[in-house]
Image (cartoon, rainbow, N blue to C red; front, top):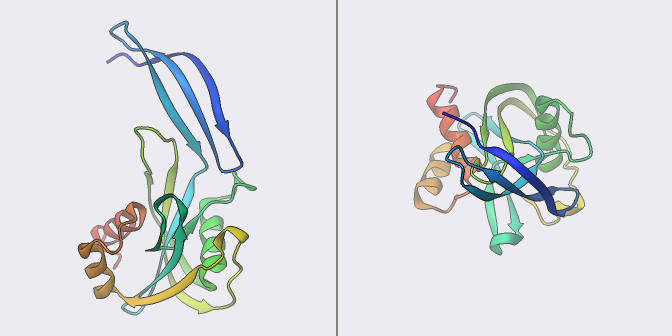
Length: 179
C-alpha cells in the first residue's frame, strides 16, 4: 500500500515539553487532507515492585482537573538522548526516593499513535532501597503510595486507576510472566 506524502508542515505551538504541528498531506488516492501531530519526547514508566506490593505516585493532573494514582513515569526534556534505563532509574528515585538494585526492560509502546509520536519505555524495578525524593517543581504535591498488587488490580478494574500507560505497562509485565 502506498504511503501518505507530506506536502507542507508548520509549527502551530511549541514549548519545552511539546510541539504541535499541522501537516498538509496527500493520500494515495490523490485527495489532500491535514494531520495535527503532537511531538513529545519519549518517556519511561516504572513498575517498582517489592514482595507483593507496588509503588504508585499520586499527583494532580491539570488537564483532567484531579489527582490520579499512576506508576512513576517521566521524561528528561533537558537530556532527550539519555538512555531510557538511565531515565527510568532517575525518575524512580526522583518521584519515590527508591533506588532499584535490578531494573529490567520490558517493552516500548506508543502513547497515542493516531496524533502523537511519543513512545514510552516500560521497566520493572526490583531489589529496592529507600532514599530521598528529588521532586521537580512541576511535581509539587506528589505523594508516594505502596499498595498490594491485589488492591492495585482491583483499582484498575474499578476504574479508580485509569492512566493508560499505567494499566498497559502492568498488563504487559503480567503477560510476560514477570510478576
